[in-house]
Image (tube, rainbow, N blue to C red; front, side, top):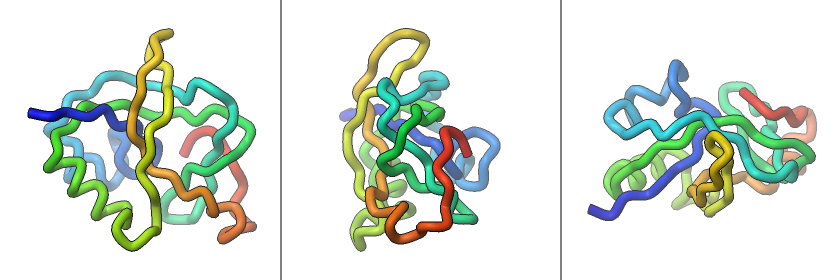
Length: 120
């Protein structure tokens, strides 16, 4: 089965509202942070959006199958352009990993009141 690593930083993290429904059965690989300080999280109220910034974003990495990935794509609105899924590099315990994640690169322009932070 084709498995993917996915970096999550918002409602899909452990203890957050969407975790159990989407990642509850997926393999947790560890807490992680982006490998470079070029990201930030815009607080959009009910959820965050990862966009360009000046910090490292903290999150979690999971190994998911294609069915789970497709379900998360629907949640994140990839088909209608709300988020885009792309590959970034994250650090898990000192090791670099290429992981897919969900980006909203226009978040700061679309939601100018949202302040960027590293964790949500």
